[in-house]
Length: 152
Image (cartoon, rainbow, N blue to C red; front, side, top):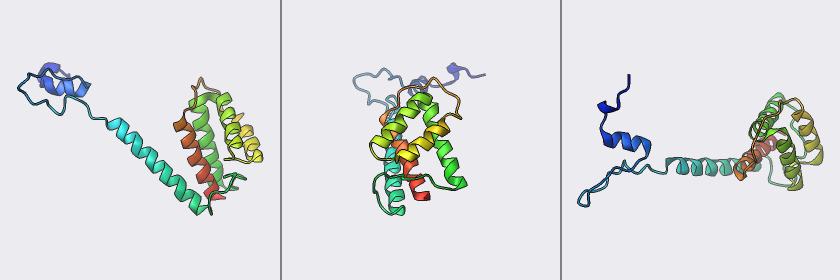
């Protein structure tokens, strides 16, 4: 059994992110203020995603619009499409996923025929009580588009 009395109070405060009381003559403990680990990790993931998108577009022969004029005709491509749609439906629900696909067509990430094919796939997914899609979700979608374009 875990007993808080077995641990140093400074450690417990650091683990919860609470600041330890300090006296004016004490140097503050660096563990009392949690580092912005999640913020830095998120920034690193975003930077890696942008780099991946550029590499994938370069592999696909450049970035002409629409980025995805057709879906790849392969098992890997189909699996990637399903993963992407599962992601969109999981985050935003089927209706928001459909709206996102229309938006991606409007900004010329997708050809109209690709949007239609993806919208048809959406019907196979159970609807969820998703939330509004954010810029981060759209950035992830762009990575899916880039990967699919690289498979064509």
